[in-house]
Image (tube, rainbow over all chains, first blue to last red):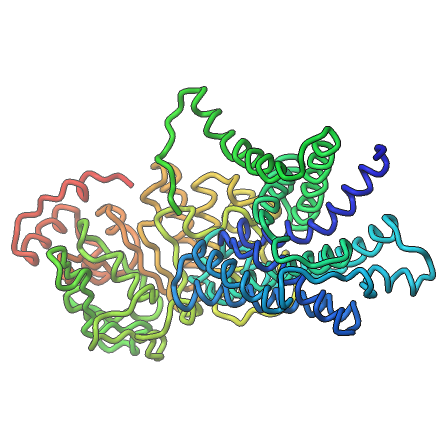
Length: 301
Length: 277
């Protein structure tokens, strides 16, 4: 792999996983709702898209359906928290566990191959009359990302979107101003998981199969990308924040791809990612420790 | 000492309002023990009382943070809101909290905060939250403060000082003209000079917008020199309710005497007498 292909692979992955990162950003940062259901919704999107495509559905519609399934899954996570008062963390974990069984049921097994079927990527190539390849994959994913990010960027600046963004910031104030924070959490969780499932659907189609295990560690990857994006680009306004999520994902994937090229075993990557997140999260603590400043006791929730 | 005879019906009425916390445990607290209060239009009431007197609980009941015990009634502007959830009665109640962080969203800009506040109690739709017309409105509302915030609409609120944030919270609480404004020890955490500024701004805005307001304070001087009516609370009850005429001639010493008489015990809460915020 030369530098060009290293960059183009990272660019493709940065875009497609960037959707997931934006989803993680929405829950973790915007809603202050640590939704771990991502590990279940990502393969859910892949499963829905794969099964529908194998059944002969239009791959574009199958991809949209995957987005819809993510909306539904996120809605359930939000309902567990807002209506049944189950903690955000546990709501997400419950969904992640439940979705594992659901995904197996949907696929009728652990894996659905798509190698002989026409995926969205194949269809775009057919329509344009070109051969598929990395350039085409990047172009198509870029189009999808542009559509969804533009829509989200608009939505988050509307009246509803603004009250959603304030919900994670100051829930008491939002209620005091007459907006339902429960509703905001539901909308936010739905959109977040919708984007994650969309990413899963695209990844499954591009790699030529959907697998029940493809979601493992996605939440940590999303978090790592959010943290890198925030740290490197220091975005302030919502538009730049969304772009920083994409940029952070690109840098993360580039880092991973370089590590792979240097001979790292693929199986070690999740450990590397986890260590990366730990290090970044611990930096403020270590800094204070060195300066001898006082630190509050560890938070549990 | 009752005020309000032969005036129009109250804009806020509390009838038989009680609130008990941790009922049935050894920590049981009667935070409010039978409150009857009528607030008239354009009243500016200052509420004073020691810690645990029930001042904040009273404001929370008005704002709908929690409902009163069964049998109590809260009526605002003729509407029975007793069991209306907090976010559903937002249109009636604007509030500034003790902590400047409580009334503003730190990650959002000044104009985004104001836009949220402008739509207090209204249904929020898919219109862009900020447009040129609203921005103009925000500039005008902020210019009144004289703090230069009108030129910093895009500044994240988290970077403002406590006083600036509290002044912004004040504008946010009043910009949509709620029926009643609640000031919950809103200057208690500010340094004396800033506290004075925010207090004067509050008074000015209440006067200018012809608002009905309730201000909780720890400071007797402030309770006496602002507003047209003074209420003193003790152990969940209103023990003193003084109107404008009496209030003007009253001194802090008179207030302490009045407290002693009404509460039937020696006044010994230094925190009230000595507090300078």
